[in-house]
Image (cartoon, rainbow, N blue to C red; front, top):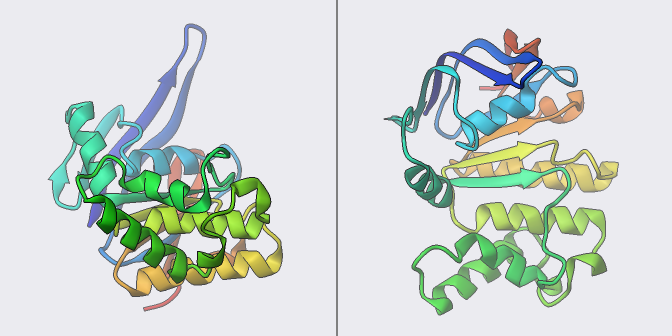
Length: 226
C-alpha cells in the first residue's frame, strides 16, 4: 500500500518559491488501478515523482508498501525503484541504439539474474504485450503504438509491485491508446498497483478510482469500479 500523509513539495529558486503539492493525503491499495487527473501545472507529475521515489516531499510522510521512506539514502531508494517499480512515459524513453529486446532487458541489468533468466523474462514480457515478433528491431523501425508496447514490456519485465504511467496514451491514436490501456488494466487485474496520470476521461474511466488535483491539492476522489 502507498500512503501519503500531509505531503507538501516546494521548489525554490533564488527568485521564486513554487508549492507543487499542498498538504496531500491519500492511500492507494495494493493491486488498485488509480487515475490522477487535473489541469496542466496542478501537481500531477510531481505527485507521480514522489510516489516513484524520484523526488522527496518537503514535508509530510510517505509509506511505500509499509516502509516509511523519509530520510532513506539514494542507494536504498535506487534499490526500491529497481525491485518494485516500473515506469511508462508518454515519450516512450527507448534507447535508439538498442534492439527492442535489449531495451526491455535494460530494466533487469542491475539485478543479479543470470543471463538466461533475463532473456527468458524479456521474451515473456514481449509476448505478453504482443510485440515478440519485433524483438530484433530498433525503436525507430516501430510505430508509436509499438514503441509504447515495448515501454510497457520494460515496465512489466521486472515483475514490479507498482507501475507508474505518465500520460501513457498521450502520443497515441485511439486504437493504440486502447491497446496500451488494456495492458495496464490487465496488469492491475494480475495484482500490480497501477497509478496513471491522464487527461483522457475515457481512459480514466477504466481505472478503479480517480483522484483530481487542482493547485497541488486533492479536490476530489471518485470510486469508478469495485
